[in-house]
Image (cartoon, rainbow, N blue to C red; front, side, top):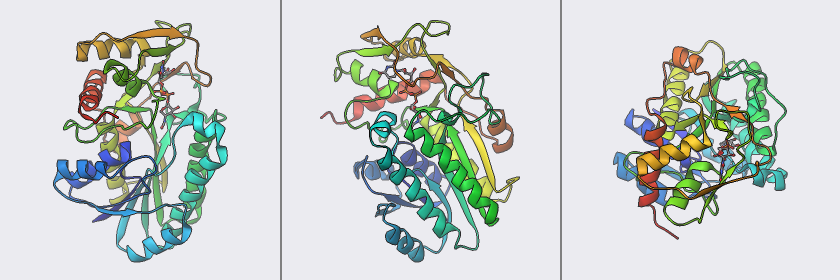
Length: 339
Ligand code: WQD
């Protein structure tokens, strides 16, 4: 069975390709290589021994998207990762984000609605909840006004899919709202490859520990949390990847209750920034150089998932804990070529 993975050479995409291949799916990857390299394809093949079909294609090119689907009529499901994801960049260049994340989604959906049936998994984010008023956050929590154009593309993306599903009953879709995916494959052959200075906590920590960055700045210790630093739900990327496979299987087996469903993908466990640093120091046996600085604008105080819905309905549960995930990220950091 042939599955299309857009953005399949990205961080979560590449790990999902590995899990799909392990389950026997034939994978077709589309990627425009804007934020990754072909080395990732080699990493995937090194793990699974199976070369996926790869097409370098930019989903902003509507004619190319149409041609792609014309020549791949046998695609049974689409997992759509391709998108830009840097929150700060999206504030500076909103139209780039609306074009990259919204136009592309529309073009893919337009092709799917021409098919007799289609199954679509969308990468959404816990960012849609903003600062939720109760923890853990369940899927019924209200959607808050987006704090950035990036966050808005996830909200609008979900709405576009929902509206489309309403008029195309043969289109079945699941949006997965990820909390904070981190870590790397146990083989250290694929992992996160931030370009330039990392914006996210874990790559910043591992790059500091390896000597590529001088010091980690901890953004604020005056939040109303146990140690004053922000709380997040860090989920191993391999667990995140597996969630996509079970979500896809639910659609392929017609087990879905409606043709648009949403699920939180997290561990259910919140950790503060200082707890993450302690966990890193423990698993790496390294002292991390960090200092407390002011708050980062736009950060919510706390976000961790109620995973009951994914546990009960998808039959999916995170298997790795924070230390496992951090250790895998550290091993990966020690493997990748330094620039
Ligand atoms: C985690 C915590 C920071 C860096 C973002 C996006 C979200 C998403 C995942 C994307 C926060 C603190 C960080 C640093 C720090 N989706 N921190 N020093 O902001 O929860 O989520 O990435 O694709 O949509 O918003 O993740 O890793 O940036 O931050 O103290 O150098 O670490 O303040 O509390 P975030 P993060």
